[in-house]
Image (cartoon, rainbow, N blue to C red; front, side):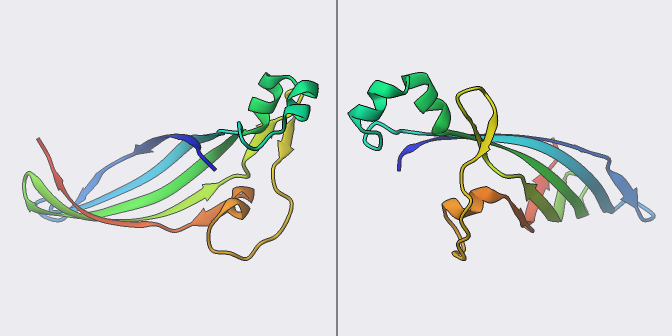
Length: 139
């Protein structure tokens, strides 16, 4: 299946400097996000269905949206005043993906249970725990 994906995430946090010289950084964050998938349905929908259901309603059924909530805390160490080594564990909760039905009422796309580690079954919502390691350069 082909299509496009768009995701926006906004994080809010406060940096705390710890230690005699402020070498250690703690930065708790909370974030909200939105994601959208638009699938190309040209080869998936038969001509007879397109004759009965208007094209814009078919398009709405193949457009999936979800909200995301992120909690994280960044732990960092100043190697120099401008270079920071950091580690950020996170909790990401993605709500169930939804599409719009004929009357703009929300409907669930998938009701089946599948135990695979990835795929469309994960559109029912998920909680993940990503971790990020990095080097930050302050300008």
